[in-house]
Length: 302
Image (tube, rainbow, N blue to C red):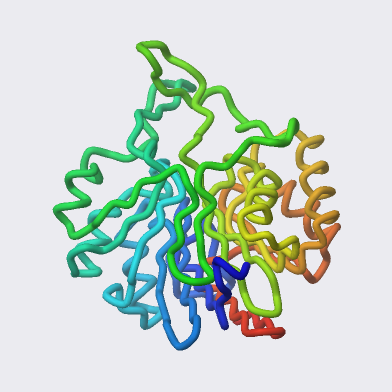
């Protein structure tokens, strides 16, 4: 924590998510995009985590939220899947600057496809290729190691798979290695860790393909902090067996996470189990939600 530093405050705005609140003016989509506004010693940085799959809907939501894309200082792509990366070039053009840091795992551009019910590429499209990202003003920082975004905020880097119960979840996701079609373990899956003064860690995920418990263990090891304040994003338990869901919730309970807000690929069953375990400390994620964390205070604004 001393080496990494701490944030004085963190504001999280859900720009895109699968669902929207009742009466909401926003547009939902299958995907996720979160805006992190982090303050440390008077420095404020705005980090865009993922861009969903529909840039038109994302930009529309930002306009309705009175958020100008030009305020974004950096982008983190948590992994290659289209519902997190599609339209990154369009978003970079909306930001409208050059040398915009785009932080990701070096494997993010690998071939990734689904085999059932038929072949379908599900990774980054040619329109969002490395070359197109750079043409649009993106400056790629690709690393397997944890990457410090600012004092108090760091990526997990490639997540070590430590648990035995957290599988990727499906064998229909494939890639090609040495000319052979193999199961894709989504090793490019990374998350963002925010260290907040007097509170602990907030873990921001895209899909948690690496397993949320693996991610939490890595976050605690990187920061040398064992207090997890909050988890927000997707947990990719939508097709997980009941045994894995229950074990995941049990492990999160053991970690004594103060609050959890997850949606997207988490799945209804997992959300129910999380509600039963965490009660008011759990909330389903929706487009338009805001979370403000300041010192020993947390405010949820719907």
